[in-house]
Length: 223
Ligand code: C5J
Image (tube, rainbow, N blue to C red):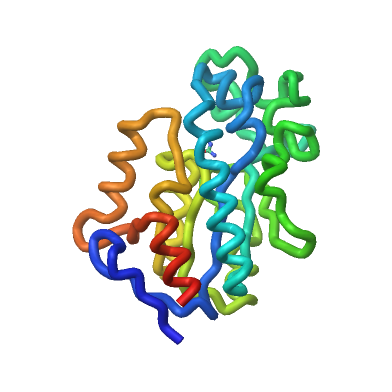
């Protein structure tokens, strides 16, 4: 059965919940808690913390509606073999990827900081994609999982809006998925970047995809 979100931007978003998945991007301690990668880059992490309850509501509505919930984590192997020097050495952060920090080594798989925040912990059996890039399709098995599950439409949440969320949405759009971003279940360290990203996504007749508030998405899933 087709569900429709009439209030989606730039026009109604129609999707079949049976072929739709929720992708929650990088809701990790390293981006959301003080002492992680986001803070090491000089950012205030409080705006990202504020969306955790909204993301939790979206995840629980998706689970209740039977949608697969896929979680991603931006992180690297302990030997950094999947972290290009161009990424690790860029800029002048207080702590670089791989350096020891208050939550273990920054953005390294298996370290406490790379874990998803406890309030949004994946359930046993849910897919968790560890990704070395900003986009979740790059160097991961995400495409294979989506093909195996018969997924055609994707609902997105997570952080940060203009980096890993937008990159993954663009990758998905190019692969033929209809993409919807939950406006209030995504956040950036830079409010202007979030606003610009939402506008870019829905410009030119949904050139990348649609956006809608979490409540509207949950109502459509519930109907
Ligand atoms: C960043 C991300 N911002 N998950 N990563 O470096 O968006």
